[in-house]
Image 1 (cartoon, rainbow, N blue to C red):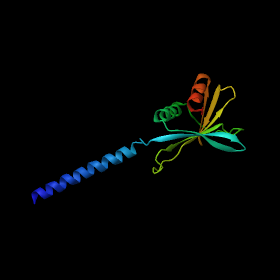
Image 2: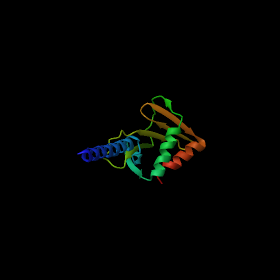
Image 3: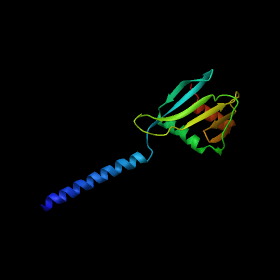
Image 4: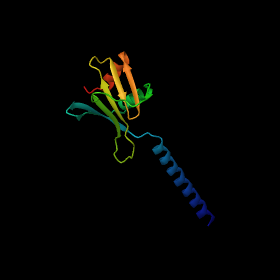
Length: 138
């Protein structure tokens, strides 16, 4: 009888460790994502310009957006954004809030303006051109 109880305790411990590991990996935010870039066409319409699935590229864009100097400010522009960027989980089963970024590019590619619902940022010169190169559909 003692062996049965020992075996049961070991089995429960193994299940507890497995369940804990699965929960911690799910909560660590390592969900594979794709970047969807919608390009303004005309007449208030956007089309899917590209779906970036290469995780290295997606992570580069995420890092760029993380490193930008954001101001807590709502952006109001006179024209529609050139692009709308948002990250989506590769597996649609995941329930993750999708963050959208609106992106305006000036004609000379010297200035990029980025906005979320509550934040605004501006990239200029080399920084703007490098970000355009990273996300603009080819």
